[in-house]
Image (tube, rainbow over all chains, first blue to last red; front, side, top):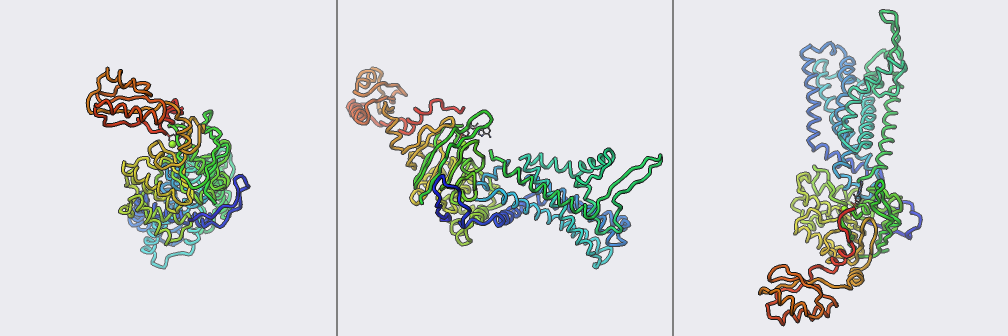
Amino acid sequence: MSAAPVASAPGAPVEPPRADGVPGTWTQALLLSRYQLRDYLRARRFVLMMAIVAAIGAILTFVLAYFHGAGLTGSSDAFYGSTWGGGVYVVMIFSGIIFGGDAIAGEFQNKTGYFLMGLPIRRTSVYVGKFLAALGASLVAVLFYLAILVGNGAYYMGAGAFPVTLLESFGIALLYLLALLGAVFLFSSMFKNSLYAVLVVAVLFLFGFTIIEELIVALVKIEPWFIIDYARPVIAYPFTSPLPAHVVTSTGPRGGTTTTYNPTYAEGLAILTGYFLITAVAGLFFFEREEFT
Amino acid sequence: MSPSIEARNLTRRFGAFTALDHLNLKVEGSKCVGFLGPNGAGKTTTLKMFTDLIFPSEGEAFINGISVQADRKQALASCGVLIETPEIYGSLTPREALDMVGGLRGMDAPEIRERTDRVLDEVRMTEWADHKIGRFSKGMKQRVNIASTLLSDPMVLLLDEPSTGLDPRGVAEVRDIIRGLKSENRLVFFSSHLLSEVVDVCDEVALLNHGKLLFYDTLANVTGRFLAGATEVSVEFLEPVPDDLARGSIAALPGVQTWTRQDPQRLTLTIAGGPAAKARVLEGLVALHKGLVAFKESRSALEEVYLSQVTDGESA
Ligand SMILES: Nc1ncnc2c1ncn2[C@@H]1O[C@H](COP(=O)(O)OP(=O)(O)OP(=O)(O)O)[C@@H](O)[C@H]1O
Ligand SMILES: [Mg+2]
């Protein structure tokens, strides 16, 4: 029998957690993520994701070959700054949608929640476990993309052209992925409907945020530090020197001035971290209060 | 300690509609309790609150004295749950799914292996142990669900219509499994529409109607308390029974209140006066020499009680 006797009489205040053999919150989350990741890697959607990355990689390889390096193969920073710094977020958005869109919503829609939630497990563990699995599956896709890039880079610039700046940029990209998945999970948890979650994330991250950012800059004329897209160029900062000026004021042909903003390095990191923390907490907040009706 | 579940003022409203109305129920000890009620009575709603799938509007649910609302993890640690027909991740196999369940419940690897073999055998799924669940039929999935519920050999079992979707053999097997569970230090609380199943395996029954508990008592007390009146008996003869015989000799037997015809050979009689009256009627029917081949109550005692208590059977 896995249960330990309970001493409290009915009605007595609930005892503090006792050692009863049920693993802790994090252990359960990690364990759940292992099986969830296995489920992802075996499912058709994983093949789909890999096909998307392969297609992006193929187009990129073709363009580089056709245009003899497209002017990017002079330095590894220029090469990775464009292909990785400027492109990995697309891979991440696709993988976030594919692996995260229904992660929470699916538990409600597909009744898998009835299976998991009947177990002695905190909702936090379920949420975190599913998050880690989506993160793991996305990383597989991202690493596949990186492998394609490194292959191309080695072809044009030699095997030694693997800059340290790439590692730094990888770290920032990871932060972007966390923020993105945080948002995907938040919508997935809020809507309890994977289609809505996927649509909202796709619209926002593929172009919605960009439009909002431009509108804010053009109309309200303030720094759009609260839009995640604003922070995205920071992924390429390790390859960029010097960094773009924070505020750029230019005078138009008719004398009017326009102001554009670039995030500082620290600001970019703070925005990404902030998005991750806020969406994670908010998503969890919703999930804790949601009912399996 | 003996296993227990308790609902204290457990209430759930959906908008203006009250699905469960101040349920106060304490079930304690090693026994099997049938949870009955018409469609929409609130059985699933109750069990969902016992497993923290939905939240009460009022009141609290306890498993082994631990409040589910205050600490779902602790409360469910000693409890196996099966609500509706859950789906398991389709690309996992039953063995993997049970591995996951065992791991999450804190069982160690050898224990998981041993219990997995045992429960998969109990639900007759051993030969499917390493096939992907996604392609299973509904009944096969439900068998895996039952296996997962039993895996940790829990003290308390909460089952919501466990035989949903199973074939007749599956229904019989689940009945045997539940009967087998009864022996040890275990409380089984399960909702069912199959009264014969409940009579067969349960010691006690609770009846819910329109979100209110009508009674919770032992099977014997329930039938004794509610079945003072007439019972309906179906009789069948080898030869056709003409109307005048029915109207005359049969209707005149002491205890027979009414008769209705089903077909030339079969009649339905209502008999008042308990077992003694029934025995006298049976003897009288045999004495007609029409070849009496069957004499049986058209409904079980529990069915009589159910039908007398649940007057408007349709959901609210
Ligand atoms: N999410 C919900 N929103 C609104 N009403 C609900 C919801 N869930 C359940 N109900 C209502 O609560 C009542 C009780 O439903 P419940 O599922 O508990 O019945 P039940 O006793 O399990 O019935 P059945 O025997 O058909 O399974 C029903 O009238 C149902 O319509
Ligand atoms: Mg139900």
